[in-house]
Image (cartoon, rainbow, N blue to C red; front, side, top):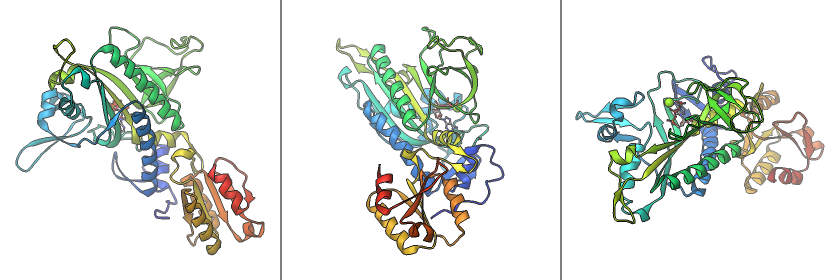
Length: 406
Ligand code: ATP
Ligand code: MG
């Protein structure tokens, strides 16, 4: 065990994700809204990142890594230097101005310009998974609202509105798939309220009291509406999405959103192309964000009990939490066997009481707890228990691999 969980949660923690992630040894707060990801936390973050990456690749996204440190000029070109209130600005010792990326339209648009000359070079979708900096007035709710946070942001460029809308729908479906794979049910708001004159945009909201969005949602479909933005609907109204149910109120966390950016940035940076008819034209641009660190926090808000976190199998830091109760040789043999079978396993061979080890295993929340003790060996094997279940059982070493390998 590289990081030992804390006996008690941090005093200033108001939300479950803050409390459990710090106590369990996943993150440490450097200051409000800024966290270190410790080995367990980093493992989880990378797994979430990879699920997001797979689904972005599946719809044709090209992954790049754009810088966090930006020259002031690009933000002046777009107008964001003066209008974006959360933009962190800094000066070099020679007096030059810079900004820390709070989003990347100002980088990706001039970048894409280098690769787009003709209509044949479009459509194109570029994304990266990179830290963002925002001068949020109130960083709060653990890793849900940070001043430094990890975001997946994708930007797409199209020759016409129809092609954009087709891709936009694919991205929406990819998002719903990502959240499903992460064990979350995301409701989608149509921020434009379904009015055709406005540009389309969707927010992806997960119901949780730790969230900041006030929504009305439907139990029978994925429809929801953000009532901070739109006041057309009331609690109890029939769901405009499916017509089958009534709208109910809830707090929610926005885990992602997608926007139609129109031609704002392509015009500002003169990203144009020559169309089939020989004319110079501007593409249509869309942007697609997912708050990767916020999503990790939301998963903790959803998957926990009074003892700790209960990670979904596919994003748990380890599949197995192996507890050695003074049987070092057998434990080491089983540990090596699991590693050979490519099963991610955490070995707790500390010289502390069984009760403390069990409490830490519940807190950290790996899907399987396996205990090797004199008693289990006398009964013919090891004791295995799923984090979500109460009862444990004794299985042989062979059975263990079969059970866990599934
Ligand atoms: P919010 O309304 O929560 O401030 P936003 O509209 O500013 O979000 P975007 O700029 O579109 O969000 O960013 C894309 C995604 O990044 C959001 O959907 C959210 O999941 C995440 N995100 C935004 N701000 C933060 C933050 N301060 N900390 C953590 N994640 C964030
Ligand atoms: Mg914001």
